[in-house]
Length: 151
Length: 151
DNA sequence: GGTGAAATCTACCTAGG
DNA sequence: CCTAGGTAGATTTCACC
Image 1 (cartoon, each protein chain N blue to C red):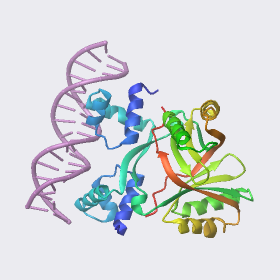
Image 2: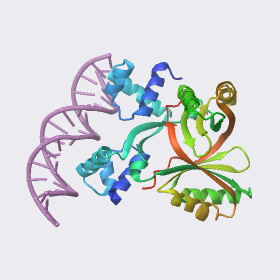
Image 3: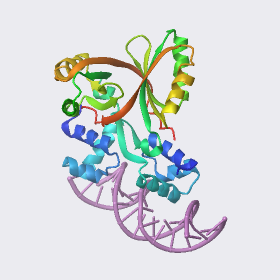
Image 4: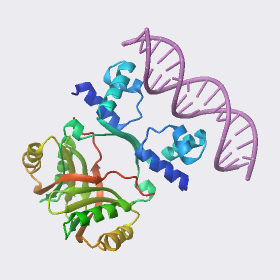
């Protein structure tokens, strides 16, 4: 199980994974070798899935973010698989979840502009045979952003 | 602007930010010094916001993920600020967005179990004076997960 | 908890277009 | 003059004590 120091270490790495073991050890009141050893143990035990770089969407020219809810009209496994393949092909769709409810999907999308979002909805999603309804909501502001997981 | 090598570098770092400059240079057919320099330049120009560790929610005992939509009944700036403060206080809420529509919020939450989610909804969110409606959908499956941003 | 060898990063230097 | 590749000193990691 995780003690309090483990939790603080995981919280710190979620905010900045480029902390050195020396910096970590200062934050946790540990020696550098102990901080490094804890990090290795938490990685080996599967608490840390991977280390990633977060980009700035606006800096990349991706000015429109949206969540798109999709409902399928026909609910067979074939339709679901075909829809999943479509989702995986589209780079604007960065994440996709299956939600409780009747074949209800939630997509997170990043587009250059509104017309690209509309094109995705009308010329890609609604064109798919199994899709019965699409509803999008554009993100105006993200006022809490990827806070550390509650441990 | 970004050339093709920059884009591939950013895509690689989004999937594994612990790649060494040597590994990056192999992937990009560059020398190690050039790969490191490009990385520095992209950081300095603001394309990379930060480097983070992604944890495994299930490994941490967070077995329930959900998206919660919240509508406020009264729409003044005071109510919004008060609601934003509440959101920031709750560790289960890891992200929060303001969406198009009338004071409509989307929250991403991670809970230990269903009862913790219900407690968050009924004893925290619905207790707030400005909240008029709360609708939650539980994540059954994430079939696309934080793909690299389309560059 | 500490230490040292190995790996890694990065500032500087040189070469080529 | 700008971009690419090489090198060496400094930093960081990690296996061992």
